[in-house]
Length: 391
Image 1 (cartoon, rainbow, N blue to C red):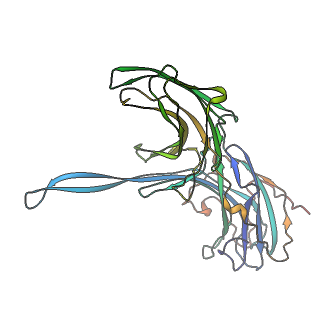
Image 2: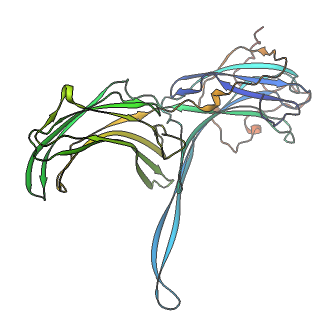
Image 3: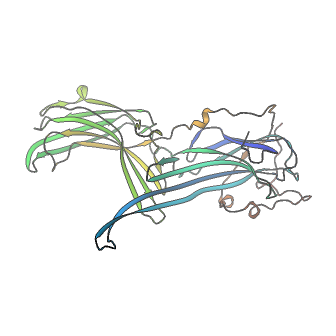
C-alpha cells in the first residue's frame, strides 16, 4: 500500500471516497498508513492538495532575408508561447505522533475538506504543437526530520468537475434568413427552429436534435441539414497572448427539403448525434474555464441552401452546452490491502483550508514545522489537541 519511497519502513496510501467531485463539493477520504519497521525519523502525517494549470503552443513564421550570395532567402522561425500557474496548493497536518520515530502499526486517518466553488474543471489535451492541462491531486506524506531519509508518500489524481451553470433542460433557438443568389437576386425567406434535448452531456452520450423547417416562402432547396459539435479551445500565455483553436469534433447530415415545402411538428427533422471524437483516442475533453486554458462547446444545426448564396446566410442555430468530465479509470482498480490489515482508525479530521495552510512547492518543511530533536517532544498538531483514535 503506497509507493516505494520509504518502503524500508512501510508505506502510505490515499484514496478519496468518490472518483470525482464538483467544485465547491465536500471531499471525503482516507489515508492508510502501514509501518512495519521501527526507526523512521518522522511523525507528522500531512495532507496536501494542489491544483495546477499550464499550456504551451508553437507558431511558425516565415522571414525573407538576403543570403550571402545576394539572392533572396526565406527562413522559417518557430516560437513557443507558454503559461503556468499553481492556483491551488494547501498543506495541513492530519496527525502528529508523540514519539521520536514513526511507530510500527497500521493506521487509517479519515479526512474531509471542501473545494473552492470557483475552481476550473480538470482538463488535458496534447496536440502536435500545443499542450493544455488543468490537473489536481491529493497527497499523503510523512516527511523525515532527517533529510537523508526519503519521504513516505503517495498521491492520487483528483478529477474536478465544474459546477453545472444550469439545471438539465432542453434548449431552443430559431433563425430566419432572406435568401439571395448571385449577390442580388431575391429568393425569399427560409426559417429554422431547433430543439436540443439537454444542455450538458457526458462523452459518448447521444444528443437528440429536432429541427422544424419552413421553406414555403423560399425558391431554393434545402439540400441537407448538418449537425455538429464544435469546440473552442483558448490558450493564454504568461503575457496574455492568446491562441484560439476551433474544431468540429463530430458532425452528421441528413436530407433536406425542397423549395416551397415545410417540415414541422410531426414531420420535423430529427438527428441523433453521438458525441464521440473518432480522431482522438482520448475522446471528447470536458468543458473547463481556467485562467490559461478555456474549453467551451456549442451544438449547431444548419440548413444548407442550394445555389450561390455567398452574400446571404444559411439558416443556422447554435447553443452553448457543457461536456462533463468522465469517471477516471483509476477507480476501476481495487485497493490492494497488506496482509493481516487491521488498522487503528482515528477520528475524522475536518480540514479548513485558509491562507495559513497555503505553501509553495520549493518551501521546505522546516520553514513551516518546528520538527523535534530527540529527546524533545514532536510539534503540536496544527489543529490543536490531538484526538484519540476510534476503538
